[in-house]
Length: 328
Image (cartoon, rainbow, N blue to C red; front, side, top):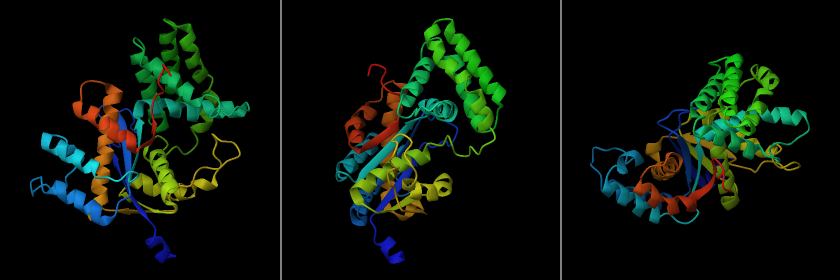
């Protein structure tokens, strides 16, 4: 068995900007993860080329340091151009929107299920999108932020259920002054108090962390290309805690596709130090590039390099937790 596992193709994965369950860190609005499947010699060659262009005192040519200089940015683009098609897969999450999706998952979906409705087939993403859209509408930002903070605090057992629903009521009241139609979407949340009371007694550890669902997407994508493979992740406590679930997720029904099971991901997950494999360096660069590009999309402003990264990132992207375009 060990010989078989050792002979499998290997994918190396690394993250960028993981603030764990703190999804409202204003300095880290986006999370990204990248998986890299490259032969050792090609990966080492790409990394060595960049190492030759940085000071010897810099042990690791990390994305955050390379991107600060024009030379570093050019070196990154040269490295990206050498990556074979299909060798990189990335996923990402808009953390603010992820709060909305989790409010739907944790509060609304159980209520819908109780009434015989499969919300994942019938509008869960649209509902989360509407909650997010209300929150970024001029005039509603403050009460929306307070509601988000209360939900995240409640999920992390830092605030009470009473406080959560008081913030939901306050947000709905603020919105109703300008739009009774929009406030009805928030009224739906107020009807979920019984679900929250039941959920408050359950284990919610890591429920908000974007690392597990985004890594699953990458692993499932590589599975389609490679068949069975080994996933080697940079040291990560949260992935370690959920590695057994990730390896066996295909045995569970897919709630969004009745009658079908989840796609299979990596059968074997292990961990290693990022200094031991050149593929980790490339995973750091690709995850960093995706994070920079997605952050530019999320917050706006001028970022010429993020614009340049768009076509590159698009070729790697599998899926992201991202607000739907209100214009369709």
